[in-house]
Amino acid sequence: MPKIANDPSRKTWITTTSDTDFPIQNIPFGVFLTPDDIITIGTRIGDTVIDLGALHQLGYFKNIPLTDDIFLQDTLNDFISDGQKTWRLVRNRIALLFAKENPELQEQKEHCQVVLFAIDEVEMQLPIQVGDFTDFYSSKEHATNVGSMFRDPENALLPNWTHLPVAYHGRSSSIISSGTAIHRPMGQIMPKNSTTPIFGASKYVDFELEMGFITTDANILGESISINEAEESIFGMVLLNDWSARDIQKWEYIPLGPFLSKNFATSISPWIITLDALQPFKCQGPDPIHEPLPYLQFSGKKSYDIQLEVAIQPPSQQETLVSKSNFKYLYWNMSQQLAHHTVNGCPVNSGDLMGSGTISGPTPDSYGSMLELTWKGENPLSLADGSTRRFIEDHDTVIMRGFCQNSETRIGFGEVKTELLPVFEKKNIKQEL
Ligand code: MN
Image (tube, rainbow, N blue to C red; front, side):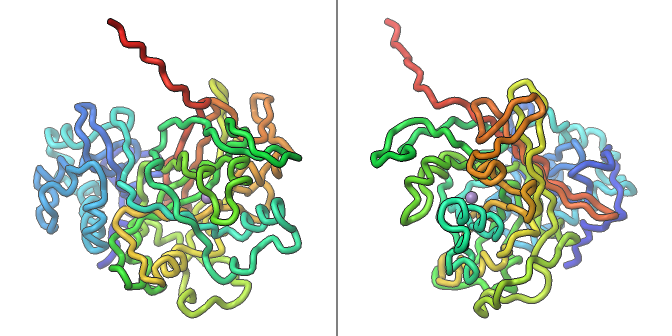
């Protein structure tokens, strides 16, 4: 099926600006709460949010085989289960419905009133119910930096790293949408020059600049997904901040990898950008250090040129850009990750989330965590308000943004924005007699 929704020459009758992340060529999917407190699935053009549940009820998708309530859900999981053919039919239909020359909906003013909202009027929700969350470790630069700091600069990459996409199973219960604040975690920490751990608040709370991809029901128990079919099972991508407590991590991670240092919060951006919308931005990835095993070999381009930024904003201050990176730096691409994840027959379901791992680039200003940007805190960063940061402080807000840009189109991800609050304090609710 042609991806007509990507036509760069299409214009829309919805008001947009030339620098929007959400031109009519994007057509992302998300879940939002309307001003009347109705939860619905929607898309976005410019700063206008479109209620797909209402559009479907009004009959605008009547030629597409969809169940009546497919968009009247609080998650996208069922729609994602419908598969790539349905995603394309819906995206193509939305593209035509909002095309400048099409009067079909444009002239139905009372329909427009029910279907269209300003972005400020709605409240974005977590777009998927995540059954399983896996976090990879696929940036060579990040793995090399961390290996150099904590082990040995001469042997920074462990021997398996160049042969397989290393990952761990994360936790889905603490995956949150942009705008949800988190608390500084407590945990066990081994103080420097000590032999017994203490219990306390993490002092080294960090972000990890990542992207996540979201799958459909890809395989059944025992079945694997071949690398050249893997992209058919990927619905789309989001920005992902894999919050990390470095002091807790350093003590707990041996031998099974991170646990409580990572599972207190993972923030994602609310709009899922489809893999179809990203097709114009496919590119070559890094050259392999050596040829991988056949199930990880692929033909064609499997990387994506997505520009990424991280900013820190202290309370009531302006934000400071602290890192600029790119998704294309990743050594292992999404197809390799999914082929590897399923090569043993592990089933992947609709709404599963796979994190890329911290996306660090080759230069120090492109590192994707404070751990690397400040080199374990040795070189603090200066912020615009004159303060300095080794790690993230209480009430700082971390903002990640991402976009693709060529001479014709900009496809953006919006942002994922999270404030770090102080340690959680249990409220003493005294019963009044
Ligand atoms: Mn991570």
